[in-house]
Image (cartoon, rainbow, N blue to C red; front, side, top):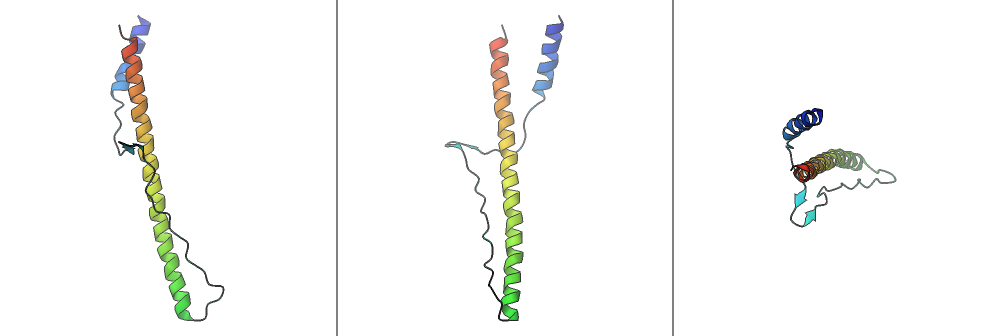
Length: 102
């Protein structure tokens, strides 16, 4: 009797465990991320004028923006991967539940 109640509680909690969010699953297997890692700006050994300083500072600002975009892209990829892991675990549990039902 207690075992049946525990199974019922487990199934009730399990049914509500739907995964929402993005996914990285594709037809050709699990995809790599498609995030572009920015290249650091080339730093001159010495600057010969204000234009070079201003240009370098602008390149650093652009690099910092691109780096934040890259990190956001990686974080989204990881979040989607975690969603996929949850989906896979749900399917595993469905198979276990099916095999255990009589």
